[in-house]
Amino acid sequence: MFDFILRNARIDGRDRPVDIGVREGSVAAIEGALPEGPPDRSAEGRFVCTGLVETHIHLDKAGILDRCPICEGTLKEAVTLTAAAKADFGEEDVYRRAESVLRQAIVNGTMVMRSFVETDPRVDLRSFDALLQLKRDYAASMDLDLCAFAQEGLTQEMATCDLLVSALEKGATSVGGCPYTDPDPVRHIALILDLAERFGVPADFHIDFDLDPENSDLPALIKAVEARGLQGRVSVGHATKLSAMRPDRFGELADRLAAAGIGVVVLPATDLYLNGRDADHLVPRGVTRAHFLAKKGVRTALATNNVLNPFTPYGDASLIRMANLYANVAQLGSDADLELAFAMISDGAAAVLGRERLSAPEVGQPADLLILDAENAIDAVRRIATPIAGYKRSVQTFERPLPSILGNVQTRSE
Image (tube, rainbow, N blue to C red; front, side):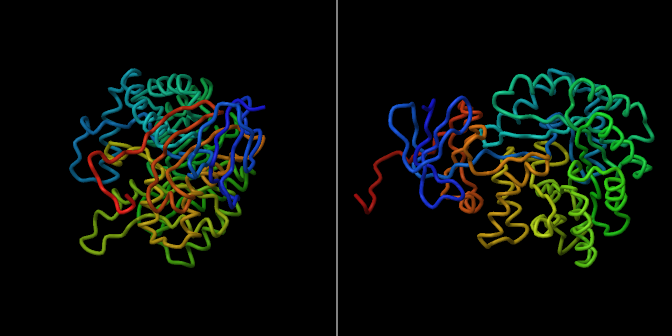
């Protein structure tokens, strides 16, 4: 009856460990005990979920610290240094660096990913072509959504718009913009939404990336999304202005984001690193309270953003680590809040991408299975649980043995 059985697995919604039977790449049964016979493996009572979801990463500009000497650590510097560096990006160079991060993400349990890829006159389509090939090569291990992205504005350099169109024609599955780098943010938003409608793809914006509570571009985006009927098809990243707003204004915008169906992705590592540079004491965190937004009905996610470049000069593509970092920064402690933090890297993150993907395995769904060294989602976030093994549509994608203590160690139990 089964091609494979994962035994003794703890999953959300079940009081006791279960066996998960897999047939033809899908979950065929979840029972307390399935028959012996098929190839199997025991999860040894560990937590099993359907894999993690990365909603916001830049594979094309990862691993470029050796080309970008950081002096100020500001957003402006990061944009400037990266713009200069990407003029020399070649397809093989981008592929090699992106592959390194993608492989880290896989062994850290990520199975779905949206990567932005810059398409402008400095880099043309070289980065996009590299990531398109990477997507093909790793299709068995990762569902990779490539977001054609205008990092450095649009209205002042309309050649970028033509390149976005080319990327979408070649296979980009979403389109992204960055209003805060454009002299006309409202027009920038309109142009990106035009492309989203034309090609029938989601839109994703880097937006409001500073700590000035005034002059937010979110109201203009909300208005445009509602006017076009694009509810549920648009998301934003950073939105750090929200962290600087008074509670009443924050609550008002949260309600409006929820009503417009706009997802919000918070990027703890980058937002912490780049924000608050002008403060000489009581430095603000600059991290928007994603859990408050979620409780207001906003689709929310936590994500990596950058790895080893001027925007984030560290990282390992571990979403479990990112959820733990957010929990620390946001001062989360209750089980309910930690469950929410895990949701923001799993099923909640999938919802931001417009996907219905439950965290717990279900009969009839693809056999995407991740074994974590934890008892449950709460435990996974608290301890930054190690991913032990992953299966994508029932095919194993990685194995990560736990460390062992060597030597003659005596324990009380002995």
